[in-house]
Length: 245
Image (cartoon, rainbow, N blue to C red):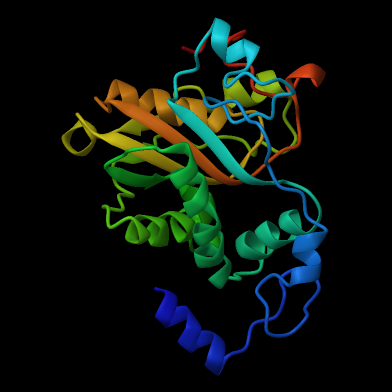
């Protein structure tokens, strides 16, 4: 994949997805002005924590259904623009670019999994867009780890409303029961599930539940970006309070 995109970049030099500076997919200046999820984070949910502990208070009192969750960046500024460029402007090379940014997060977390699965799109949205942005990130990531990419073992079995204008509780209700796993392919396997953005965690949690109900042994959740939030200001991750375990 790396050689393919290098050849494409040589023939068709890229422009920064944020400022259109030539010869960069995302230029150094835009990266410098971006925010990333770093420092001491909860080893389970990946939320930054301001203590020497390895696990946040919420996960310590009630573990979520997933085995781990991580994100590369905060969903604002240039990163938000770049994700929009991938999704709405068909900036396909960003899929590979983002996948490579996620590799160190997996290695640092020490996750072991058997298959890489993208979060499925609404069928109607997939038809109108022509591609699933999560697939464009997940496929090269699977190749990087020499593991199967599987976009057939998790399906969205009903259309859901766009999440963007919904409250946290409405997001959970909107996607509850919207996903179905395939036990024939998932049973007994560890799964890494990929999405572009995590906001409240509603989609990832419901995907995780569907995979576990289909026999997955554990599920890790990974995204390019996460909406900026912290436990101290009541962020959107409400899996414990909503009893979604």
